[in-house]
Length: 282
Image 1 (cartoon, helix red, strand yellow):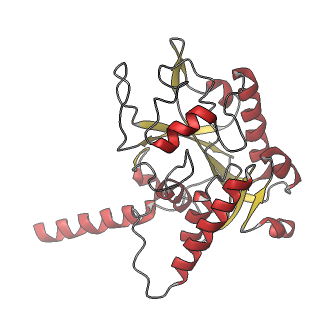
Image 2 (spheres, rainbow, N blue to C red):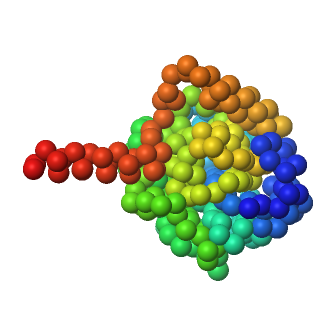
């Protein structure tokens, strides 16, 4: 259950600084956080990043050249780390005792050293690391193999448990990159949907909501959401996409949403298939 004073926040996109907005939210008021913060890509020593040649499409290239609409994505590293740690502290404050955070980020090599986000995650209750294996994309840099994965930190309060049978999907998630989204660095709906479906959460927060992906995934899984973003442009985009998704979900004769099945659906399909195979062998 969630406190009544979370009601004004529910199922809305709040255009605000994430720390300011979360600071006004009641403690222990959301069950789940699913988010992917800016990666600070423009503060990079990596080959091909500073001039934008590492992007997978033109929108990614533009982001690598300019940053996000209201965020340059080029903070000094120590400042970036402290900002993200402060964000995580606020996420934990608004999380219920049985809640968890799915925190999507990317490892990279900086000046010959692995930057695995340990400086951000140090001291937080990380329970597991999930590998998001992305498919698709192009490699524009002959000095490197094509990057095909990112990580999701599962940061969990002591009472957090997965939904029944959800753990069987494993810790490597093969999900295609997002396509057709005007946001420069979106993750796919199915990534958020799989995280949400693997829990019993009622209220899902994304303090970096971007184009509204986590909110759309929440609606698809029958949950409520709270979205926060600094950019007016992205807030408008998120509201438009959420409205379109809600209209589509409300259509009784609509075609099934062309998404990969959720975590629980995958598990149930595997169980049915194995049961059928056992029956055929008898």
